[in-house]
Amino acid sequence: MLDVPVQRRRAFVPVAVLAVGTFAVGTDAFVVAGFLPQLAASLEVSETAAGQSVTAFAVAYAMLSPILATVTARLSRRALLVGALLVLALANLGSALAPTFAVLLVTRVLAAAGAAAFTPNAGAVAAALSRPEVRGRALATVIGGLTVATAAGVPLGGLAGQVLGWRAALGLVAGACAAVAVAVFAILPALPGQPPVPLRERLSVLRRPAVPAVLALTVLGMAATYTVYAYSAPAMRAVGVESTASMLFLYGVGAIFGNMAAGYTIDRWGASRVLMGGYVVMAASLAGLGWLAGGQDVPVALVGLLAVGWGAGTWCQTPPQQHRLIGVAPQEASLVVSLNASAIYVGIGAGTLIGGLTLAQGVAVTYAAGAVLAVLALLLIVATRRI
Image (cartoon, rainbow, N blue to C red; front, top):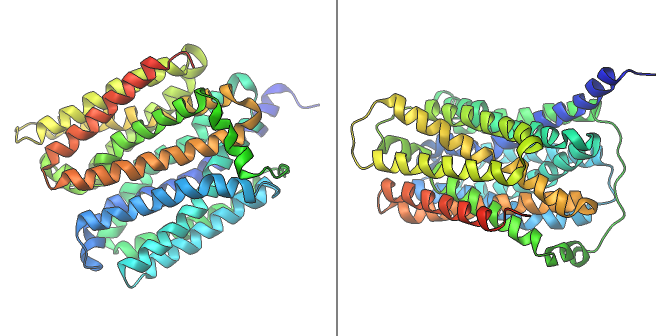
């Protein structure tokens, strides 16, 4: 019989592989921000219009996530996750070869389908493979793949876009997704699907007041950060930083810290307190960057510090939100995690749209809009903290 440490290590390996998968998915979802100006110039559209490719991805993800959860219910979890990664690989290859912006949008929607099938199921599988007392850490590990993508994948993608071209950068993402598909197939244990449940019945969980309240917070929190993040290049130029990749790296460092700290503190202090602290940090960081965008001459180190806080405040929110939802509806864990993933991308789409609308008024206004949304998220978690 295996001793407890060996059992724990064996349980952790599949969770770690799922985290690598979310790294590949996160790089795909966020990488456009790293080379937005080059993409816009190549396809002869404005930066604001190019940013709407992020909105298209986000809206498609939000709409497809619950639908795919329904139609793929019977599939083995391993087969579903591998198939989703292969769809992502093909979609990114299509994006890399897109001759026009319209074709690019179509391939981004296809990529959203792959991401919508992978990310929520990765979280649900991680929760199923983990003991209840360490579920917060398991969820944080899987979401950690997304945060590492913001720290390394996106800046490296942006650098590859500058050095090799944005098409080559997306080609590299396609290769990464295909490689992770092989790893998931080789390492993830076989897990059965679930009996199919009609979409209407699945969405009946939204009748529980606690569920839409949690999802609304996810939308607000992600909209706050993506008001600025999708337009990182002009946003960083406005505060005197020409190297967007370096600031995105620092944002990602903060994201990793915020995500992993959330995973450990949820199990000790509770999800609501973690979220309150995160929104305070996010609002303060965005407000500080907005003040600097007004023309103040300050050291780049201060901008970097605020970027770290911005990332930490952003990515400390997903593990506690998932934890809250699973606590509210433990029998529908896969579904509520899928709905939370939809809410994340509704927030990303809304934030990108707000960012595009405010960018013409000045980057300081864009930062201010993000800070206001973060304050609204703080007020909402205070109001719903007992959930």
